[in-house]
Image (tube, rainbow, N blue to C red; front, side, top):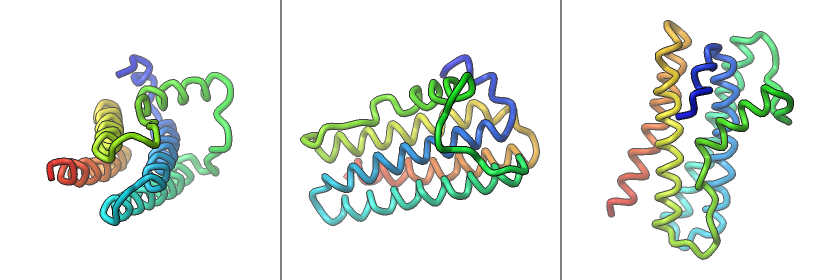
Length: 156
């Protein structure tokens, strides 16, 4: 992981990144849905996209509760924006695909994304004691749920 991850010491920053990662995940799953060839794949990608959207909304609400202000998610600008974008790119690298790629390859990319997201949050978890740590644990649990489902689908 990026050594700049050590700079994430505030829950607001972790949540801001989580929201952006969920946006990227949702966009990926919607793109995968558009090329899904069977009902099972369409159902899976529809569910995953909805999960990412719901998680994003949950993390925005947590951010607003912790920070006492609305999250500004329209643009990532300045040094902070560059920092968050760098972390986003690290986790989302390889998430794009060509329309001609097999469903198995797309599912493998989805699994890798979920695994990298989980690894990122597990890495920063140790910096967040108490209630903030429980928040990171909840994020990890959701990522683990997606990983387990994707692994089951890929093992068939």
